[in-house]
View 1 (cartoon, rainbow, N blue to C red):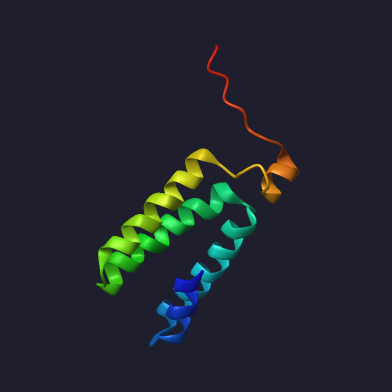
View 2: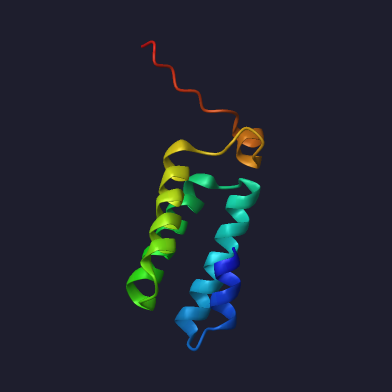
Length: 95
C-alpha cells in the first residue's frame, strides 16, 4: 500500500500512475482481507512489474511477490472479511 502511494507521487507517465493506483487498491484489499484469492496474485504481478520495468532494487519486489503468492495459496486469515463472508477453508489431511 505504501509503495502504491510512492508510485503515484513519483509517476511520470500514465502506466506508472495506474500501477500505483492498482498497488494502493491491492494493498487495501489485502489489509482488510477482502478478495484475497484475487488480490494475492495481483500483488505478485505488480511486484514483478516493478522489478522488471522500473529497474529498481529487486529484493523488496521479490519479497512482496512471494508474500502475495503465499496469500493466494493459503487464503485469508480468521479475522478477515473473506472468512466472515465465505467461512474458513479447512484442509483435511485424513483423507
